[in-house]
Length: 207
Image (tube, rainbow, N blue to C red; front, side, top):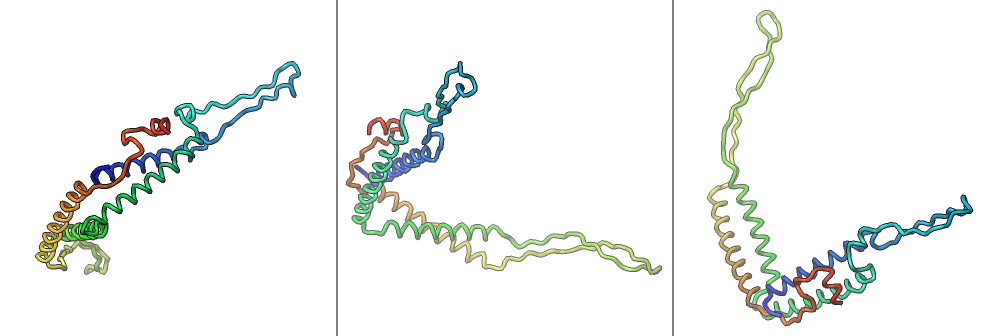
C-alpha cells in the first residue's frame, strides 16, 4: 500500500464511509415506506379508491437503498479490520512500541498544559472595600467603610515549574518528530479495495 501515513489516511476514509452509511440507517424515512390508502368508495360509491405513496425526500436524494447499505457496511468493516491487522504487523517491524510511546507522549503533553496553567498565576495584591456598622455617641447604628487588602501568593516554586515545562516540552517534541518519521517511512503491506476519493454513492456503485 505504501507508508503508514497513507494507511492511516485510508483508515480514516473507511471510518467516514461507515459513519456516513450508518447515518442513513438511523433515518426512519429512509428505511421505511409510507403508503396512504384512500378508501373513498365507503363514503362515495361513485368514487375510486386510491393508494398514494408519500413523498420521501431522503430516498429520492440518493441512488442507493437500505439493502445496498446492509451489503456495503459489512464489507467496509471487514476492510477496516484487515487494514488494522496490516498496520499492526507494520508496527511490529519498528523497534519501538508506537502505541505506548504515543500514549506516554500525550500524558506528558497534558502535564505540560497543567504546568503552563500554573505558571500563568502570579502573586498579587488588590484592595477592595468593605462595609461595617457601629454605634455613634448618640447610640445610633451607623455604617462605615474600610479597606480590604487581598493578597494572593503562589504556593509553588516557579523555577521548578519552568524547568519541568522545558524538560517535557523538549521530550514530547522529540518523540513527535520521531513518530512522524516512523509513520512516513514504515511500509504497510495492504492493497486498498476502495478509492480514497470516492463518495459514499460512488463507492456503492462500484460494489
